Image 1 (cartoon, rainbow, N blue to C red):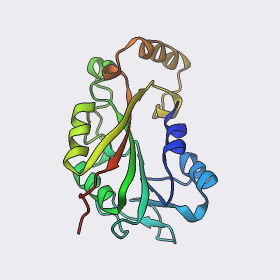
Image 2: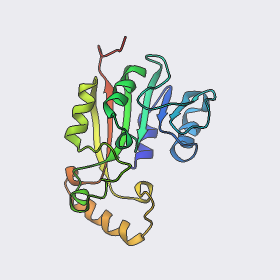
Image 3: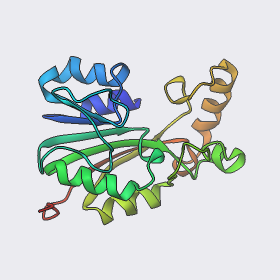
Length: 195
């Protein structure tokens, strides 16, 4: 199962897509959940309009407990203060609400060998233990965790078919902690509401 399918199966209610773009996964959210239930926040949005806000993930402009689900795909690694984002996600989620995020695995074998995730645009890299710790510190409990292989969906520009073939072959032989892309579903714990 890929991250898109996982998100579509595990999000519900009123959904916030943090770092959204108008195509791809965001369009699939609208198709499944309806335009009225899907909201977006992104620093590069041209202007505020209805459900879409130009804002930082570290200062989400919606009221406390407004959303049932928050999705952040390939976002947290680009943030200077990822803890602030996780705290904000907790604030805007209803009690028991779900946060689904995806991010490169700093502990992956490929990253350990090539250091290819350590780029100028990746400010905050995590392995699973560090990400789980950040989520727990900010009022979440991890419910599901798995890794994905390197794919065109996660490629960031490389389109060499042999790269995908060999990396995916390698991925299947590795233990989870050494695989490339992490997908985490966490639930907001009771008693962690922000006043």
